[in-house]
Amino acid sequence: MKVPFSPPRIDEKIINEVVDTLRSGWITTGPKTKLFEKKIKEYIHCSEVLCVNSATAGLELMLRWFGIKEGDEVIVPAYTYCATANVVMHCGAKPVMVDVGKDFNIDVRAIEEAITSKTKVIIPVDLAGLPCDYNEINEIINRKEIRNKFNPQTKEQKQLGRILVMSDSAHSFGAEYNNTKVGKVTDVTVFSFHAVKNLTTAEGGAICFNLPKPFNNEELYKYLSIKILHGQNKDALSKLKAGGWKYDVIEAGYKCNMTDIQASIGLVEIERYEEDHLPYRRNILEKYTRAFSKFNWAEMPTYETSIKKSSYHIFTLRIKNITEQQRDQIIEEITKQQIAVNVHFIPLPLLSFYKNLGYEIKNYPIAYDNYSREITLPVYFGLKDEQIRWIVDAVVKSVSKVLEITSDLAL
Ligand SMILES: *Cc1c(COP(=O)(O)O)cnc(C)c1O
Image (tube, rainbow, N blue to C red; front, side, top):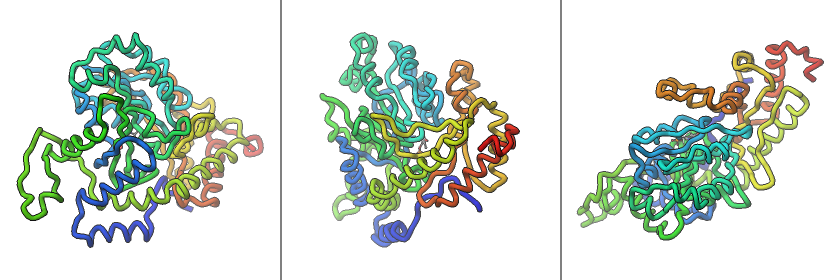
């Protein structure tokens, strides 16, 4: 039995909606993208939503909007996908990496210690879909002595008067914190709709805005809609209308708009997301948890606490007391059974680019410990019970083989 890692959920409904867009005569940003933004806004209950062509573009756009440049520092977890730090590099600023906790998420204490007068933004990452400690993070940035340290340079920085919290919520669409959807708990939240994410548009992303006064989120939305289209004050659809040819360019903007083809996939996905997609994923995580609880070598991920609810994006199993080499061997054994697993993630200081910049993994012991013992198991809509049993069986056998535990003992 072959088990893929996370195939997208493509069915007739999605195909029909995409075909409808193709036949409509309008395939780039237009009515479907605007409708998708509206649906996301209704789902999250945030102030405004802007769709873009990736989470990476959304994160970078917002750093640029906030005026991040050389000399600035942006705090990111050492344990994340490279996109979180790459966008900081693009702006010429310094990603200040901090360690994570046993729950894989950014360590709030480490954030406090890393804040300097150069800190402009914190980018927490909701790893595996579990929201970060946002009460604590929001408390820190609002603290008087931290606000006094803040050294604003641009109009936007002066208006905010403190560090901006922009969550990288690439994994956590639909997750909840204090009974509030992620997307509403921080100043800015960026979601990813990449093909392997919970809710996909093939490629795509969305930015949710909840900036405090004196910001006007609606005006910001309008301005950024222009900024993601070369700074051109009229989009392609309005230009197409008779007599609508004249346009102006108000700044050297970017090009990262979402197309209606992408949005049509998202429209079908979001409609059934809460009712059938999320419970399906949760069920898979429950089944894995129940199955592995029998084994004392298994360390299960947290996906619900008294105030957090994950989006059940991935199942991050850790094996107790093993080395990185043993983990790699276990993965090799699992792969022999035709099951695709992954590791989320290789900590940034272990990647050549960041290592060469001087980041050292020894400064991030928990990130390394999490990574060295982690195996991400398949979670996707449509994964069947018999496949789950097959995966569990393959993991148990592989662990037993590599750790030389006899099957009896393992059970
Ligand atoms: C997938 C991912 C991204 C990037 O998303 P794109 O939409 O592909 O740009 C950023 N951060 C994390 C943690 C991710 O997993």
